[in-house]
Amino acid sequence: MPEASSGEHVRGARLGVDVGTVRVGVAICDPDGILATPLVTLARDTTARDGSTPRDLQDLVRLVREHEAVGVIVGLPVTLAGRDGPAATAARGYAEALATRIDPVPVHLADERMSTVVATRRLAERGVRGRRQRAVIDQAAAVEILQGWLEARRSGTRRGGGERAD
Image 1 (cartoon, rainbow, N blue to C red):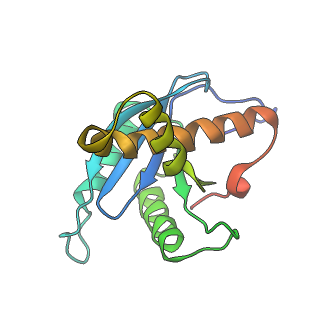
Image 2: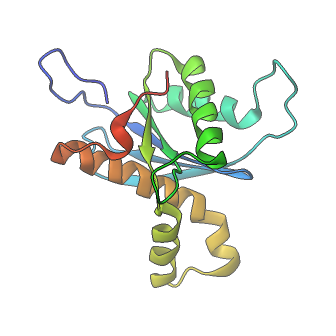
C-alpha cells in the first residue's frame, strides 16, 4: 500500500486479484480501503505468443487505469506449510508481469491460503451453488484476498509478508 512520507495511508481504490489457470477474479475496494467488492472475472489468455501481452493482463492494466487504482494485491497461494508450490510460482510470475506494465502503481503479494474455500462457503451460505457459483467464485476469492489485506493493514499485521512483486 502506498504510504505518504508521514506514514499515512494514501486514499484510492485498490484491486484484488485471484489468479487461476482458467480465470482471473478481480475485486475493488472503496477509496478509504474499508470494503472490497467483486468487480469482474477475466478469462486467462493461454494463446499469447512469446513477446505478446496476454489479453487478461491487458484487461487488468485497463482496469487499473480506468479505476485509477493506487495499488494491486495479488493472491499468493502458498501451501498450508507456508511454502511456494507451482501455483504460487505462477502467481508470482503473473504479479511481476503485471507490475512491469502498471509501474509506478505497486503490486503486492498477499497470502491467500483458504481464500477460495472461504469464498465457496460464503457463496453456499447465500444459496449460490453449481453453475452460478462457478461464474462468481473467482471474484469472491479476489474479494477475500483484498479484504484480508485491507484488514491486516488496518490492524498493523501483514498478510503474506506484504511483499512487493516488483
